Image (cartoon, rainbow over the protein chains, first blue to last red):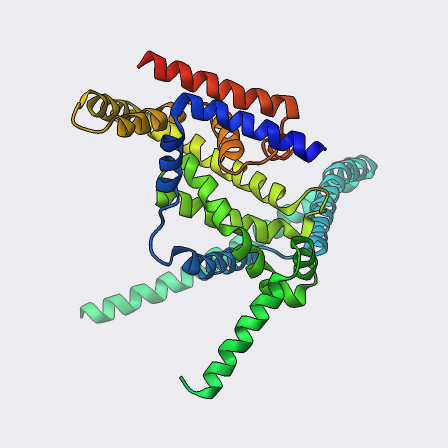
Length: 148
Length: 200
């Protein structure tokens, strides 16, 4: 019953269109539309399958699967979080410990450390100057000999 | 051709006839069981490729464009068929894929082809004023021009209804509208084409 009604409705719709354009114009249009190159549909199957295979290889280059993608994302997240936490802990801990240690050291101890190091520095400088002097002397004697 | 070749040909024909006995749904199930994927897909393609191509060509006119879109449609079908839940007929789903691909193409083309539309109108005017040609040829050109001026959805609905003789339920599913909407689209298309013809 429903099919019958659908058929009647279809015939009515087609008749309305044909009343405007005429049956032959619509038929001619369809005839022109259905013109395809020779053997087109026989060759289409192979070309479509080729396009599918080409598309598949393109897609599989970056397709690493859902779980692998999740694993990679999780690893990157862990690395980023660990690095961030490490940097933050270093930033907050170091200056506090240094400040605390400096305050704990008695001033006498600091003075004696500075004095002792000054002496060492002087001794070192003196010895280096002496060493340089000997080298300079030896260089001068060589140059005098060469010029003669 | 030797006996072996003849036997192989006969076997091939028998096999293809046997496969043609399967319904679309059975072929889709075979496709989903990956062992027979390509064979099942090929049969679906063979069965429906002409209808898909002709419907696309009615919309885009050029064979090369229709060919490109048809290939894209079948690539999409291959990629998405595993997810097809068979809640509608396969052909409805297939035409919906074709509809979407054609609309995408036309929207891209619209940006580049505005100049061509005016050139087409010029062709029509020349043809219409030529008195030598038969009257039917003029009507033919007028019809094509009128159809070209329709909005894409109305054009698609008109083609599906008149040439593919689909019922409105199917047309509504394909174009993503209601049955009433599909009916309205068809009648609006007729009205608009009549107006265009009268204006000329």
